[in-house]
Length: 298
Image 1 (cartoon, rainbow, N blue to C red):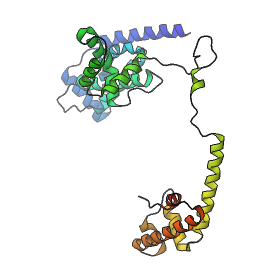
Image 2 (tube, rainbow, N blue to C red):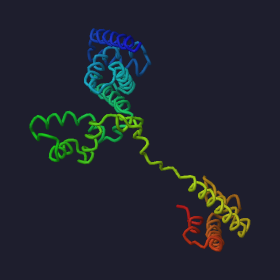
Image 3 (spheres, rainbow, N blue to C red):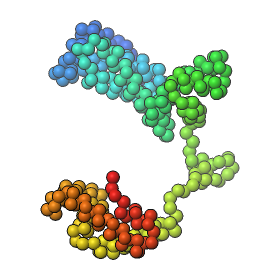
Image 4 (cartoon, rainbow, N blue to C red):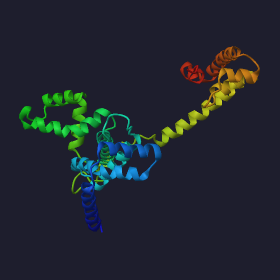
């Protein structure tokens, strides 16, 4: 079944390439006319002709990325998405050929697809990593051609300078490209039963820490409730609305609700926090932890 799918896909790719190469080239004036009809009138026939005429550009770009081990058909599909994005954003009044403008969108769409699918581990999340991923092999080939020999410190420094990145980033990407994906379920040795995942540390809290944390949370809630009870009703309202809600109320909102100025709300809050801290200290005996309850919000 998989073999049949592969053969069918290869046939479809060859047919697409043949049809695309037979599509007529567009003159500059006709190209601009099609772009205007699509942008201004939503003419889908104009879009179809524009896309069909530049499929050769998509296929040419896809062929340059074929060494990354991804299906040519998938690369072409991503390139078509980039081509359509270019058609949607192209401004005919600018003195630029559509093919020149679309080339960047096509290449960008394919590169993003490769970065998403080349490995199960996300690669190229920054501009520097992306530049390294797509240029390291090419630059290393120039080094291996006799300029620096093996990729030593001098070669890494040269690549870093060429791509304007740090040497450490060159080293990290080189290791990433040289080592393929490894399953954690694979046995460490051929005859052994231990897998790599058996040696991963579990960073989750252990049962004792979970129980202790739950107990501490209940204790803190009890301390806070009994300390709040020592405040006046208006002080409790301000503290609860300002400090104990995820979306704390503003001074102005509380002033309108209580019929006082926002400056008066601030004064009452400041005094209430001092009283609350004193009440907590009588129960907690730890000034640092009391400060966690009463720290003034930013």
